Image (cartoon, rainbow, N blue to C red):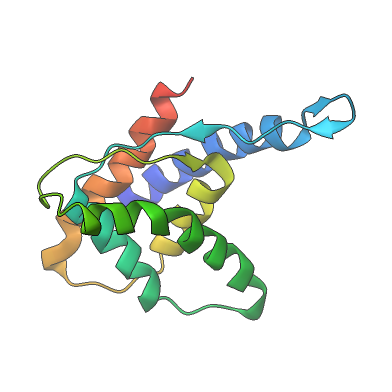
Length: 134
């Protein structure tokens, strides 16, 4: 129940942010989407990125999933290439619309209770980034 309330609150915040970002016009051009900078642990980030491979999709969602994965892939590659310890905090950049899609896809992930803390910490890092981005 707390998860549903949290996700509803996040969805409402994201809706407001998306509405202002997506419909704002600057010389008849759409403003660039707002970027947030979550700071999760490397292990949580890798876990949630891999969790994307467990979800079921509809054909209309393929482009959104690929956008999420393509946005995150360079950060995942850097963690692995630099052998960043899994308990280190990492920062990555993600646009609000892509972060919203990421959270929506993560809700459908299948994982064991042993991984619940990783999931929760990661989602909290994104929520905190929304709060601090103004």
